[in-house]
Image (cartoon, rainbow, N blue to C red; front, side, top):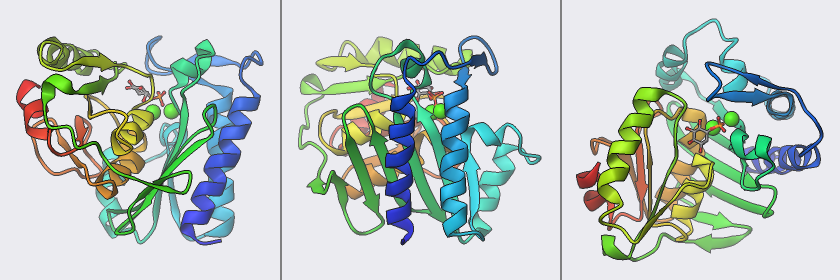
Length: 264
Ligand code: IPD
Ligand code: CA
Ligand code: CA
């Protein structure tokens, strides 16, 4: 299997595993606070993906959300070191754990591969909808095998924009302030509970833009490449180019990028 095939295979199999355990009485624990939870299924999904990828590519490096808390190196150091790594897999085993815990569909599995710090492929799988979004650098973006493109909408007043509510209070306040300004300018705002799904929806034209503060590489790396390959734009909330250390992110169809940044 090549890189893309293994990413798609592991995303699909992990997605099926997660879905099969929905409502099964799994253990849920607080991470940094009661606003930030993890289940035993998040951990099982990550281990499953990690084993599948490293069995195929034993020399590659792996960064998973759950495992990162056990890493000896701080996350920032791992991401800065990515520029020297030929192959770094960046994985969110369940993006949308709050949805998952509540039994709300719409959680995803997100898998990205960065080579020397540059995104090479991204896969986002939504097991409840059986939707696989993916992109490879320079090859376009796809949803279940058909090509996808961002929406051509160029009026903020006709746009549907999404955001999320991070567990970190400072980041949450920043989202809230942006929300206060954007809500008066765009048609409506959605919060679907998975940053990866929001980004995938921008890429496929279902949403026109997404922003959130306080995210991490595993939440967004795959979605960033999928948006870029679908013809959209991704920066931080100040308009700087995306890199693996970006935490305050804006992804859009390109036409609405400046107007959204202006409001944030
Ligand atoms: C969360 C989701 C959510 C976003 C949070 C993230 P998790 O990831 O992407 O949509 O608002 O900021 O932490 O914890 O479910 O993997
Ligand atoms: Ca996440
Ligand atoms: Ca997660």
